[in-house]
Image (cartoon, rainbow, N blue to C red; front, side, top):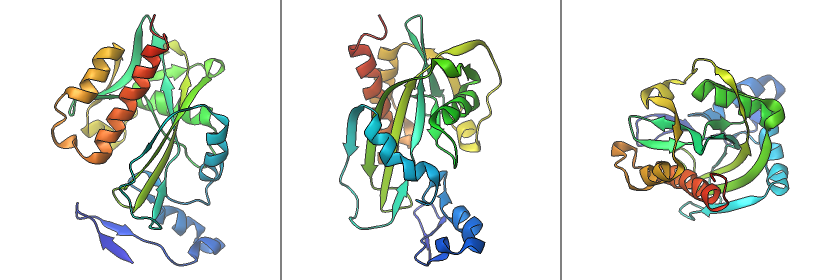
Length: 229
């Protein structure tokens, strides 16, 4: 049945067996995509997320235990690119909320990690990833109370990659445009400080703060492991 969240939007909670009815699969998939979150374990990326998680080195885990056990679950495996050049790292900077994130996003149905990485980096930054340069770095696992679901689970797969000299235009979603996403070749220490200490205005929700801290911790690991020397 539909229920209204704190922002005044309706969230649909599905408890029927429509997922098993082939004629309703399109409707089921649309219901299971809410605010960009893929909630449907029927889809290939979600089936493979646990397998992929076991293959990659775990950098750290975030389990905030602020969720209701046995509640509704949203799962969104994602891929993020680490692009380092001349001691700087290519990051997406939200000018509106003054935080930094690695370019990347959710894995779409039937996409491989590399396909998602190429698409997301180009969309968010205009940079064109060289496919042969992609190498694994590590995984960050995140589990907490979601905005629209009781439990939000996200596997974040981080990959090193290089980019072509030429670039193209960004292709931003509406929320990315609203947040004024720009590409910035950032000093990692400055980006860590921004995420942890700057005023982020009305972006200070728990989910947003956890995302900013995740990116700060990955940047700190890269610094500690000598990738910027």
